[in-house]
Image (cartoon, rainbow, N blue to C red; front, side):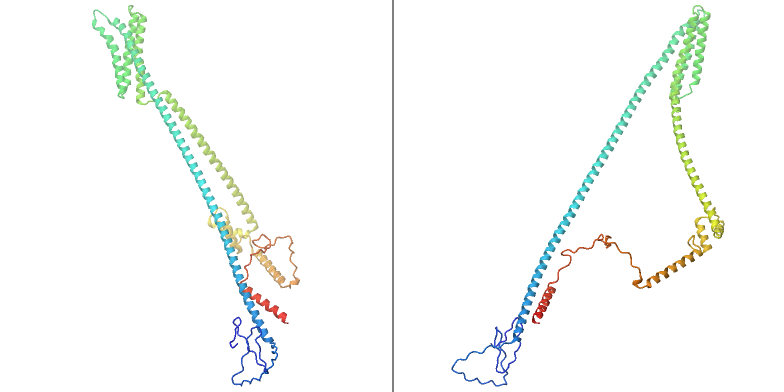
Length: 481
């Protein structure tokens, strides 16, 4: 073989020539290099006719070691490539499984989120429906109440209108009855009194006196018509009433006098005539008086009594409300007086205690109070007086107390420094922790963490291959040794 054969990309080492011996191609290995050109090639010896046995191949441990090393290196590279491929495949599988698990977890999480969103939307929808139903029910109830109130108001208005109509009709009816009754009585009295007066005034020698009854009764009748006119036109009715009663009294007196003195008339007829002359005008004036009061808006006795009753009820309500307000104000005044008394007693106690225990500070506080015109030593005045008298901003701290406090702090600091300067063996051991006490670590409830598969990421494939190669080399070295 004239060419150099590469095994796994690595050229073989040159084997030195030892005398006449030449390296043989053992196991497919290339032969050694030919001698240099400047050296003459040895002449071949004549070969005997008889065949000679072939020489035994020479054993080269260096070539064998190199071949073994190359083979092991090729095996290591192949194994590293296989491990790398397996690692990459495992990494891809793990990554795919992780992605699948992550996708599944994400899908589950998204499904849970969507379920929660759907539940919340359903709850909101149900709540909105309930609110809407409640709103509709409220509106319907309000509409029902409004309709009921409106119907009640309309019914009350209708009832009131009916009552008013009935009352008006009744008033008109009774007014008509009263009107025509009064007039009927008046004309009936005239019918009774006129014949008596005609008999009394009739005389053949004085026939003109027959008009006297017409004058007397007509006088009262005319004044009665005048009273009606006065009522209708809102005029004063009193003069007409006086005239009516005067005319009726004269006619009644004449009827009674003639009844007493004339036998043809008689006493009974005279009395009846007098009553008839007075009764008719009196009844008519009573009717006109009621009409006049109604027209003038003058309340009747019943109306005045109702007004007085309502005024008394309103006055009782006002008196009760005033009494309640006075009771509340009296109670508030009593509570305020009690608070003021307690505050005054507390202020007196503070003043007496401060004056007794801190006389020098009290003098300064009194000076400040007097200068400011305050009624008592307030807390602000006392704080300022304490600062001015003792120099301390904190009430109750005197120079002596401040000195004692600082001395105690210095002693405590010195003791702490002395304790920290001791060696560790001289320090008392700390309290032994109970074995059943919680671990005390944060965020795990006191329980040590538990290792689970998959907690740490896997090794990189290259790191795995390098570790395997180092292990093989270590094993080979141990075998050679």
